[in-house]
Amino acid sequence: MSADVIRVHDDPGQIDARAWNALLAQQAQPTPFMQHDYLLALHRSGSAVPKTGWLPQFITLHRGDTLIAAAPAYLKSHSYGEYVFDWAWADAYQRHGLDYYPKLLVAVPFTPVPGSRLLAIDAAARVRLAAAVQAHARRVEASSLHLLFHDEADADAARSQHWMARQGIQFHWTADASAPTTRFEDLLAAMQHNKRKKIHQERRKVLDAGVHFTVHEGPAIDQRLWDFFHHCYRLTYRAHHSSPYLTREFFAHMAQAMPTNWVMFAAHRAGEVIGCSLIAVDPDSRQAFGRYWGCTDYIPCLHFEACYYQPLQWCIAHGYRSFEGGAQGEHKMARGLLPAGTQSAHWLAHPQFAQAVQDFLAREAHGIAAYADELHEHSPFKATGSEC
Image 1 (cartoon, one colour):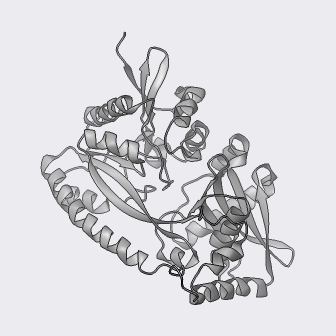
Image 2 (cartoon, rainbow, N blue to C red):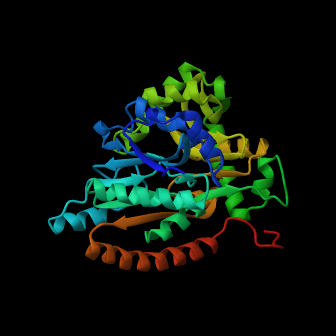
């Protein structure tokens, strides 16, 4: 048998799309964001390219003509668009006269969604892929290697290479399999009285402002809505004094290549669209992922309605089993999303800095665990047997 061949690609278009997607389908936690079309659209649209600080270094492992492992990797000149923060590490390098950038990142750009990252036909191929990624990091003289929002199979491969584990927390809604429902009101009925009352008040403010929503699934999102959405998306970034990561061309690619993976909620007032939110969906796994939103007019509580209540109502009505609210945001708990753990893995080339980061991560892990315990004590849902 010939030896497996490792290849590095500076354009995801160099990788066979059918082979990539077939490999993805075999993973424990596939998501739409790891589909070849999604990653290619990030590149072809100018969103994740060398000009914006994302140099593709996709790594593949081939056995003969068969793709047996693959990972989306980027050589990074900054830490934007990652949602696992290492700015303090970069600052420490700089203060000691060392270069933290470039670093090698295995992740989906701008997408803090947990899922499979090290795609492989089996555990052995996944370990081989992890070793190849680390060898490439050394070869290009990257300061470090970072695997973000990976799954448990990836965690095993990361441990085999002695990468350091880091924990994080997001907020997700998960359907109660023991009490299936198609009514948003049943979710509210399971919540504590004060939380339920607050949600009713927030929704009432939006209604009293004369706002109503329309829902547009997949191909029903026409070009006019996509244009308006991107305008709102840019306004949201402008309000936070930052630049949007994704170009209009990216969403044009999505509308063409992956139309069934998107649902848009449009807010109307006085005959005009004044805001919208966009979620990604996986119809096969019945998972939904909150992504982006924006508005042209400020309406109190419109953000909560567009980003949480409308998507949750849709997910429950359509039998979806989960809705992920994205990065950060304790305020999501009051809207029915509960803490969920995330993980990343890290390798640093500099031995002394690696030890310092290892010590930091050990302390941070204790803090994250305590934080998670505290969050669970403040669940918005009734305790078992409670009538409140």
